[in-house]
Image 1 (tube, one colour):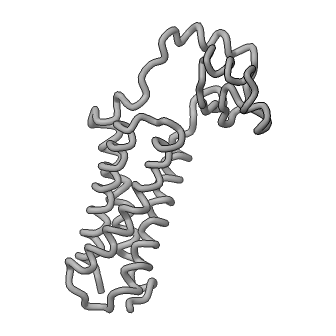
Image 2 (image 1 turned 45 degrees about the vertical axis):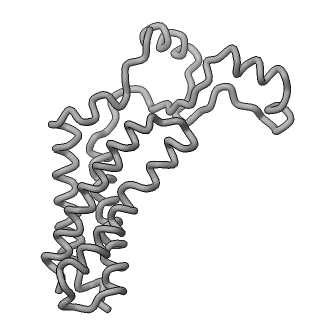
Image 3 (image 1 turned 180 degrees about the vertical axis):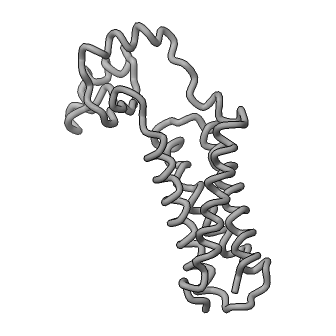
Length: 185
């Protein structure tokens, strides 16, 4: 068993590496450019929604208010007539990249802490690189990738978007695993 406090350097360094590589993946490479296509008639949709002043949040349309309403013929007609959608409404104006980047870095630290905890409970100091790589990498992959699949399963996010994000998570997990293996006490 390796104490969590002995793993602070790989936790922080892997978080920095993931932060830098993820920034390159999202800002330099065209990999995610097609994840969110432009809505047809975007200006008309914006003009129609603006007067409604929909507050920031997540919404489902149409949304039944009860099980009984879900089974009602009128609700079925709403589904057939469409549109059927789920949407996230953000506050107006530019969003704060600083806050999002800071939260992403904190998330990477949390994934690193879990990778350190699992690997540290399973392996003693002086463990072989590939053993550390396996435990830290698997845990990091779980943290960076698998929860994303729920968005495609339940909310119909395109599987292509989820697959790309899963590959991103694999890259981040491999970075984390490599740094943990390299800096294992």
